[in-house]
Image (cartoon, rainbow, N blue to C red):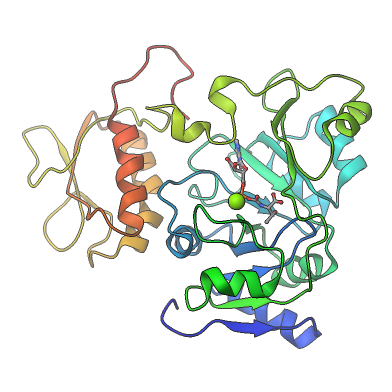
Length: 324
Ligand code: TXA
Ligand code: MG
């Protein structure tokens, strides 16, 4: 998938169908939205979402925005309270992302939400984005379509400058006219919070809500998952870079060899990234108290996997809300 060339598709029905087919089969497609171009993957597939992090060379698994064709679809994935309904009504489709409590049976990849119990949702207004999302028929996770640390792209040519050969396709839909990412509003506690300023001015959102927006909680800022040391801690104590399990430890392998769980028997980092959250979850579900994890090479996606494992293994703050 990453070895071939990136194809450029236009806006014909056949092109959109082709792009949707690539997304449904787990590929990566960059597409225009009115804010910036997004790098899309099937949000229900761990392996597809892992591909986003690989293509962007992201050093961390931060939560991605999940894009929907229709506002109604949000209710299947997240708890929509009165404020959420009001903002969705007023600004969707458009450059607004709502961070909402995730429904447990939403069926989204845990990698798309970075294992959080919330999800960022957005219905883009761009007609090409809308057509692609409709044709795909699934939620599509998409960060901006640029290599990590680079400027967000607003044309297909910008996308190719950064990601040519690393993604399957880009749909060329002209220049994104907002040119600024979506405004992100957090609605996971009693007060609406401005998590990221963006395409819709905060004042317009406050007017629609009839109340003031609060700043993010320290633990809820857009990049907070990276800042809160033990945010993704499973119940088990984790020992990293272990070549063998000690007595009483469950062994999580990487590469060939005996193990209770294996992030990737083939030693493939993308597969390991896709299996990471499901395995951590499985440790909790099985009530495992101690686990040892094989060394993961610290290159490519391995950097993000090691970052997440280091957080999961960090000493826990006491208190009920530390995990996610
Ligand atoms: O305009 C946009 O928002 C573009 C287009 C492609 O839709 N997307 C975009 O995605 O800017 P990205 O990945 O570059 O930014 C996503 C931001 C991150 O800062 C992330 O932390 C925040 O959204 N986010 C997503 N889900 C979240 C959640 N559950 N809790 C807190 N923050 C979340
Ligand atoms: Mg970005």
